[in-house]
Length: 355
Image 1 (cartoon, rainbow, N blue to C red):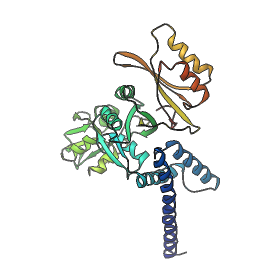
Image 2: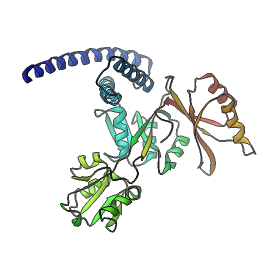
Image 3: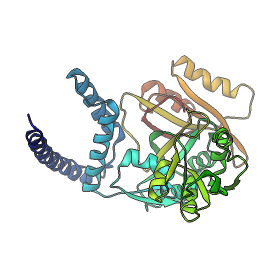
Image 4: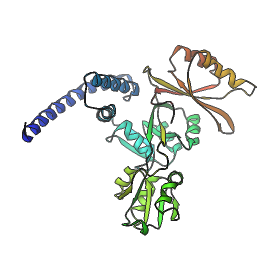
């Protein structure tokens, strides 16, 4: 086949894909009509995960050329288009635009969704609780910096549920309008990012340049774009959005920097068969209270994936995660036994054990 014939073949397939997308949307419309009549949420993470896993298996069985990541990228965007076709829903996230939280939100909700950048974690929770946004996206922990205290406090204070988790690989770039490294007089970034890239800055001779901390790496890119004698340590997305040329990529000292994010909303997920549950626990002030509580999980053979102590309002609580769904019989029994101590935060599709 010559080039023109190949292109005609691609065009014919694209026409079929377009027709199939429209057929799918018709069925989605019927599903949405039924959901609207019962008040059921449009976004069901457990259903989306079920579809993705089925498609990945089918692709492997048939020797398809698509990777698992490619299938996720294609169909998550298709899911987002379908959701917005039925009922455009606003997603609040810890801003500004081009932050890593924005990136996490787009990984789940696609580029077409309506995004609302909020300047505090509490503000994200407040907007979802008030109904100004249907979903909120907030960081919960980083592989180097640990648990995000503000998120724990808000999970304690607000009556919202975790409906999904997102894991994002954190990569930094050095972006600047300066034509030469010697012209850089200032570097903008979030304070944590300077520490994560200290070895790189020393290697390229920028360790003695003035470091100006700002509230986010996205803000750093925005400021560096207006200052030709500066640079920003930021995400590649931020550099692209603010038209800031990227000199170096992946400049972080450690290559396994990851951040986990929670998606919160006002509903609970049905079981998916591959779930994780998150709770907050306030235990009686007596010797052995924590051991007694944890022994119930051991006896039920429920795997704990995380336990962290935390102070909220001067009171010590425990942030605990474990495998399974709230509706699982063994978990229901533990919840019933300790109902005075447990605040259920959500059961959702498990993406990873830890960051």
